[in-house]
Image 1 (tube, helix red, strand yellow):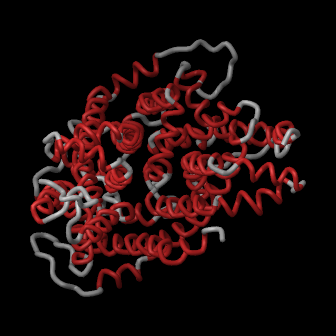
Image 2 (tube, helix red, strand yellow):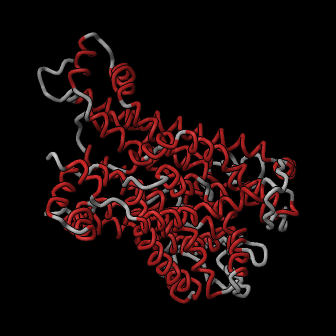
Image 3 (cartoon, chains in turn green, brown):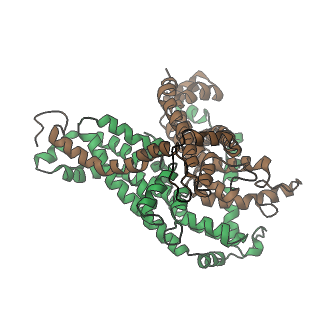
Length: 278
Length: 300
């Protein structure tokens, strides 16, 4: 035992070769991103030329901002992710509570039907969901983009796990004091599941901030278009090959998540981990 | 309601109503946008596409026959299998290597972890723009690097021989760091005394990995594997920016082909048949996980 600490540190320590390989991979990983950042922050004449003291500029961002209705796209995406998250949290909390703390016939079957969504995601059921949205007259609205995602099997699953781990004595004590089921849910269960709410919230916001295919299909005008679709329309139609502007727009659309990630790295990584490991 | 000493909190017919009411909103959404569409897809895959005011009619397996005769479908299927066959081992291998490195006291650990994970938080459309720029002939960084090394110019996305490989690389770049965190979590939960025991035994590093770490990581590998397979059928956003499935369908994938058939040609009957193929593939993989792999992965 006494020899263990030093031995433990030495044993399996990364060799120089490991360090070199890890760094090479990391550099390869950030290289495309750094190239983009370089181009976005320099005048077009330095787009693909590396001059050490090339002057930095925000001009490309200003030009991109004016060239397309990015303000509207930002507003759309923000409203969209908030709407989806709010609906997901409310609906999933209720459903998870029912699964975790009620006994009723058919519970397990209904639960496995919920889990179907983990494999057969709305992302794949484009044709039928488009048909439904068209018949509801919702095409080209933020509501249509969000609606299929309002119930999240992942959230129901995670919250059910968490709720099941909460001691029943707390629940019973609250009911002794005459609290109703919904009051108990709100005052006992929700506060205790806070880390899971944060974890799911981050995963959900990143997912829907980045989602593309369904919004592309179900929107056809600026009024409902989220950032991802706006960026694609902008860079494929409007700009030809002005890379300075396209890279600036690309960074702009990713900026909120990227900055949040760089500031709260640990929280992000842990959230993705919590939401993934079941 | 009192529980009359039962260990379960809510029980009885009155509370069953309550439970169903709690489930109702989420169930309605799931029924309307997951379960019903699956049935609808199956139904419409046996129907003709309504054209010019003519209502759809029952055509049996005709849409599936069209699929079998559609060379683009076969191209997309083969491409998708290549795409899956390349992204899965590459992403898993890289994710594992990244996690093993970052798990140790390696120089610059925080930077490394950040560098590996950053692509995960970027939108795929932004990622595709970044890589389009990277791949661009003459202008892109890849070209500049290969030019500096004395290689000739190559249009990576424009040649049928390299387009699929180029979009595969982008997918690996995007997802490897995401899977790294699951391996990292699993490695950190391994009992440190295993390592001490291996050190005392004088086991080589490779031996320790192969005989201790790898078997204990099996459940994680399975989880990552399933997600990798699902991603291989779902990740198509980057195609919209990078290649649009071209040149000459060299880089098209099933979901992208489905998008073109359903929303460029508006052939909904055939698109439904294509959707069924993807659903069957994914459900098959999931069932395989439940019934076959789950039993084999747990270390004795």
